[in-house]
Image (cartoon, rainbow, N blue to C red; front, side, top):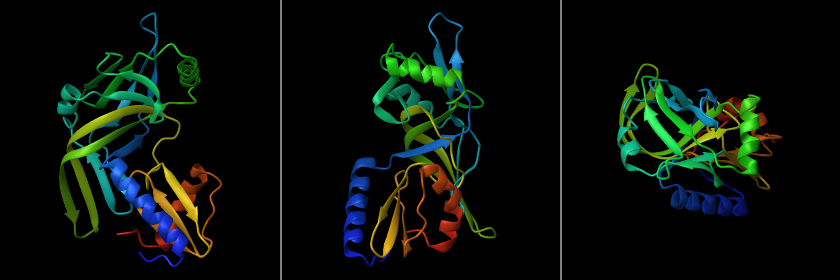
Length: 234
């Protein structure tokens, strides 16, 4: 990837270096799995699925990923996992160590139950969940073991995650867009525009002005065309 604009190239290089340092392989996946409030007890709990087994998701064109049953068994037993609101560490909903977050695997996927804190923002979130304004989930993880299958006829790659290290589960505002990650940044240079993908670390540079999304949501609608116009960074 060659960037003509020196200032833009410097910014992209700095972001890439920081992303590699900070993420250390951390990935996030978003899905349509339902989450809800459970009023079986006096205090409501947030209940949902952060991951679904054997569900193929296209991370980018030609690259698919799925999760094998049992992939979370070790991390549930050994790791101190947090529940966050929109992956924001400033908004902790629960924690396995404090028993305010419970994680389990069943035939469907990774299930979570959160006993939320008695705070204004958590009560606001529960109102949004009750109204169904928020109903999707996500999880942050590192890959420990995986199985890769390359299909020569379709030129597609499928990665099956057989073991992961879990960092957080999160109710999220936006579910997955099937072709890409949710968190995208944009840096505009004089000659090019760089799109930076927070989850994967991928960088796409578009010559000229490029599309100017009004929001992340609008950008997702344009991403298919963007991916067809340029080659992903290697």
